[in-house]
Structures are given as structure tokens and as C-alpha cells.
Length: 537
Image 1 (cartoon, rainbow, N blue to C red):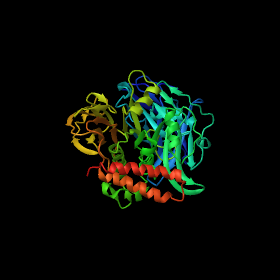
Image 2 (cartoon, rainbow, N blue to C red):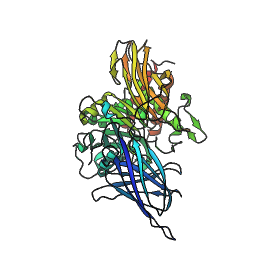
Image 3 (tube, one colour):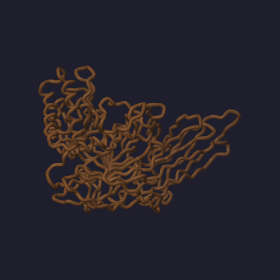
Image 4 (cartoon, one colour):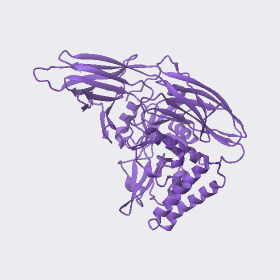
């Protein structure tokens, strides 16, 4: 497979349109290729093709060894994802005569391009330039998606088209309580061996999702948790959850919480000692937000989460996730942020929400996964956010340090709306971005902020693109931790919410779960009650 070209590179899409249209127009072939404008090298991409009447059309590879993987998922009339991911080979697509819209995208580091063409008897040859606005690997940052439901044999094509460096597809998917993980195997021969797709492009193939919707053949939702970076397959079933956590951590795997509002989430965080929290999760899409009522009954009324007549808004859902993460951090559960899409299930491209991990020196998967676990990272659905705390990476733990100097840059392909500094869940400083144009077509804002810290704290930075209507994109750094006078104190409303959630789950699961399984909820409840005694208003 062709190695992607780094640097401030420009790309060209060459479309050769040959049309013969008599008295009755028929579908005609559009042929083309995606090439590097500087080197002429053919490159992969994600492509959308839509005719004037709204019909979606899907390109194919015109090379014998090439690939074009169709993806077509709808959740509502406005939540539609219909594209192909193309290998680095020529393509072709059948189109009707008339106007056709073509959109080409490549992950987060390239400007997307939309072009309307008119297919006519004269034929068309187009050159569509697609520019890289930032080169993150050149700055030692490499992207990944930790929640992927695409088939393992599709992943090389998809990764290259989406400009991802690491993926961890879920090759085991458990949907029933008490079902051993091995019975949820989705792929054939899955070995704990790194799959090298291209230079600096790798797949770790042994990963498990426990997503429990049924118990003994009846609907009874518990929730979801991922075991990623497994060095051996799991045989264990859940509940209970603690044996899975012990086996996972004992073999070097990480536990990833995909959504904060699952029924069991407040329980599994302290009991399983979950490692990762998806600050960009699988309900955040390129297309319109749709799950406005999912777990709406669990929304904490005192947290000021934005809602409208249909439920919570997209910002409300994201803000709820942020505030849950902050609440867990305030309770002492230092989960590191990550990003996942559930590409393969939802109308979203793989890597739309992704995590960038800082890797010193030459890239390797082992360095990347260690950096993810250490919190040397930021999560994004659009902007790039490279920050240091007292000159150190995000994730660093400082002892007896009562001041933080935040430096770095926030960059985006469109102007930023605002940058915010978060301390223990509070927005303590809002910064107006400079939005200085860069030579490659992006916008850059320098960060240089100093803050005193009186008590133990965690500190993070987040930023937001200027919104288009009610849609926006964001980036969020991992936190740095400052240990000054004991543990960070949670807010009373945060602990009260977790206590309320756990109490409800104990009642809901009585007579359903066995005593030892219910005991995990009771143990979590005691943990939160002890934290309540230390809470601040």
C-alpha cells in the first residue's frame, strides 16, 4: 500500500468524465484518481457522490488490486452517512447526466473539498485541489480510534483513507450477560500480533466489547465497557465485572468507558478501575446528532445540561459527557481521555472523533499505547490542541506545585470560537483566540496562561471551532494533576448524582442479579458515600 506523503502537501482529484447522451440519457462513467499534486502519487480518501435528485452514488476501484469499501448507514432523514473509502488506486463511478456533487475528505488534517460538476455530452476533466492544513506526525502526534466496529479485513483500506495511525477494532462483542467473551468472536483467526498496514500505520486486533442488553434471554441493560490491547483472548463473562478487570489489567490491557450514561457506568469506574473515558464518543457524528432521548431519564437536573423540545441538544450531550468526566476526576478516578466512533454501527466515519497521542522519537505501537495510558494526549472532532503544563506533557503529576503555566497552541482549519482553561471542572479562564492565519490555510492561537493553585487540582484545556448553526467541533486535552493538600474534593452535586444512580441500580437489579453480583454496586455505593463526606458545595 502506498505510504502517505507528509508535509504541507496539496492533493488533486483528477476526474475524467466521458459522456454519450442521445435522446435518452443514461448512467455514464466518471473515472479519476486522487493524487498528490507535488509528487503525482495516488492516495486514498473518503468520497461522497450525490446526484441532483439526492441519490447517493458509490465509486469503485478501477484497478484489479484496488479497493473501494461502501458504507451506508442512516439513523434519521438528516443523520445519513453514505460514502466509500478508496485505496490509492484509480476509481470510477456511474453517474446520471446533469449536476453531481463530489466531496473528498481525508481525516482531520486536510481541508475537505466539495465540488459540483455538470455531466454533459462534451465530457469533463476536473482537477480538485485538497490541501493539508496541518501535519501532526511531523510534530510527533499520532491519531487513533479506540472504538471501531468495522470488519478486520476492511481496516487497512479504512485506516489509510481516514489518515489514522492506530486502530483497535473490536473483534469480540458480547451482547448477553453471562456469555463468555470467546463466544462473541467476530473474526476468524485473530491473534495478539500487530498488523502493519503501512509505515506508522498499525492495527492491534484483539479487543473485546462487553455490551450487555439482555440477561437470561430477557431485556435488561447493564452497559458497555471495552477491553483493548489484549495480549490474550478473554474467556470470562459478566457480571460480575471485577474478574474481567483483574484479568485485563494483569495482561496489560486497558479498560475503556465509551459512554458515561450507561446504567452501570458509575459502578464500573471505581470497581473495575477503568483506564480510559471517551470524551469524543460514538454519538458525535459528521452528520446531524440524532440520539436526543437516549438515557434522557438519567440526565442530572442540577447540572444545567442544554435541552430543547426534542431532548438534549448535541451540545447538551457533549457537555453532559464533559461534566461526567470532570465529576469522575473530582472523585479521584484519573481516567485518561480517548476518542471512538463505533464506525461500522453508526452513521459516522471511522476516526471522526479521535485521540492524538504524543510519541517521542520514532513511532511504535508500544510507545503509542503507553502514551495513551499516560494521558499524553488530546481528543478532537476537528481542532488540534498541543499544550504543556509547566513545560511538561498532559498527564503529568506534579507534587507540591502551587502554580501552573499553560503554554502551547490551539489550531484549526477554520477560526476558533474560544479556548477554555478547566480546573476541577470549573471554567476558570476563557481566552479569545488570535486565529492567526497559517501558511497552510489553517488558523493558530498561542497559549500562555499562568494560574495559582491553592489546593490539589487537575487542569485541562479545551477549545471550540466557530459554530456553523448549532454544529461545532472541539478538542480537549488530557488533564495534568497537581497534588498539594490531599485528594481533589468532588462537588456535592456530583457525588449526589452518582449515589442516586447507584441506588437506583441496586433497586433495579434486586432479584435479578445474584448476591455477589449486586455486591459490586453496593461496594461502589459505599465508595461514593465516603466521598460525599469530603464534598464541597
